[in-house]
Image 1 (cartoon, rainbow, N blue to C red):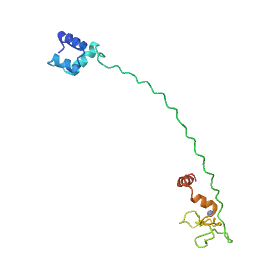
Image 2 (cartoon, protein in one colour):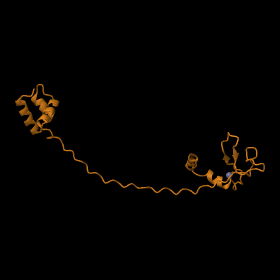
Image 3 (cartoon, protein in one colour):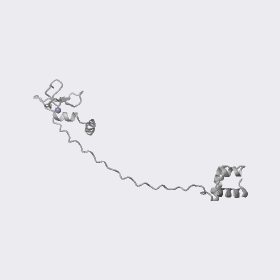
Image 4 (tube, rainbow, N blue to C red):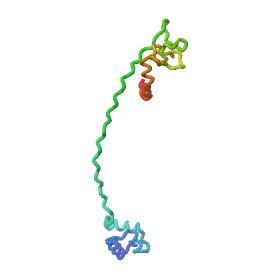
Length: 147
Ligand SMILES: [Zn+2]
């Protein structure tokens, strides 16, 4: 119950700087901390001990640094696989050491064949495929995804 005496007491205690719970204890009987806070609001006393919210000064936004895209490697120019005299491509049975072993197509598919061009010295692949073979994987992945 808020008697006039209690309200007066509340006002003075609040003005003195006591916290809501301290005031509730002082007023005793039936007055809870929440009741004090509610009454304070209704009396328009709120804001006394509330630390004013200071807006933090905004930090100047850091300009975004645009990383320059890396120069792409010159694309590997893949030549068409050679065709044998009968018009077929170099397959598992017709491949030999003097032919590029770069696989073309799905190995499980009938049309799977090899590049068959002249290998670059020491490599099982022709020049284009040797370069392609030693490219970073991500480049090859990207090509695969694109194509
Ligand atoms: Zn090749």
